[in-house]
Length: 456
Image 1 (spheres, rainbow, N blue to C red):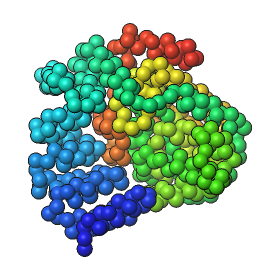
Image 2: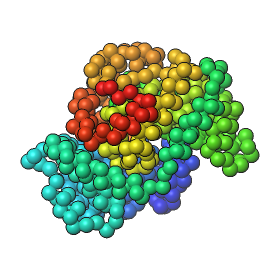
Image 3: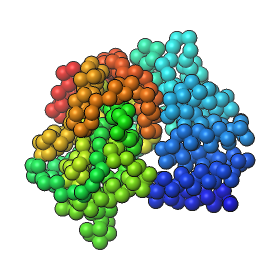
Image 4: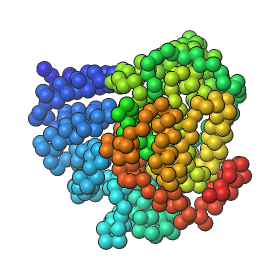
């Protein structure tokens, strides 16, 4: 059996959304590629993309046993270890990557995020020296500045931290093609298209009970997902793109595949076949290998579709994770996202996006009353047991002590969440933004002007 052919088949299956079959093909390829580190690396990458980090780790271990000094393999293994909570081991891998390839700036940033840095154990001198030396491309400088911002914050050197963050975010924004007015206008179009209160649920009849966890990134959605997936009846499916993709396909079928503007897509979505939309979403979930009746989908941007979700999937629950405005915006501002969220690198754009998001969520709560349960990150920190009981009750789940124990691993997500969720719930991040009140005053002013209350 040809391992390369099997891996190619696995990649095609994964691209088609058939994750379970893809993993079976990759496992077979692994059996026929025990002496090829390049193929084993590809197999590990496929397992990672299919949200199978433990199997990915096994493939990377095999590859590194054959080629122990390849930085790329060590980097990939560190990624798998980070998602699995093996943070000390991940740091060791990043140390080795950096020793072999000092200009791997992403490895430097990832290493900085793995733990709280201390005065006698940090990398600020190394990072500053690399920054002074200069980088071959602008993204390398961005990575270094975000790493320094994280480490200086850990050390309580807040002015240095914000200076690095501001320069890094500004440089990232400079290289983005993005217009905040389109995102704000999209919210207006959605609210106009979905004005009727409590439109009847016309979606797919199904035994499935998906739980959508929506909101903005860095607001606590991974923590809520971890609580729910610690319940014996719930499977964490991670961040699924399926609802948005199914919606676009549904509208295009209506229009014979015509290319539509974003506004036209929003307008036509209000008259789509919601039963078919619900069936398509669930078919994509099942094709991805998720068989549990009750599963979580924690794609944050599904907040855009709350009104559609409740019509397409009558059994669905929607959990809206909230965080106070200044804390939420600062948490996004200090995160270097791999993909998406282009509004997060400039304070005035961040304020505009936050205000539009808040406006849309209030609209959804008004027109689909009782279908959206809000969970405050601050409440989870202050009263975890009571907030968790309310969350489980809303989802129709009985109490289980395991929801407080956090023994299970969540599905892979972005770097910052994957690391932070390994720690016990803590309250330092609730008010962390206050170290930068002066620097963030323009953000507060923008939010206030846009009608967002910032008394916190």
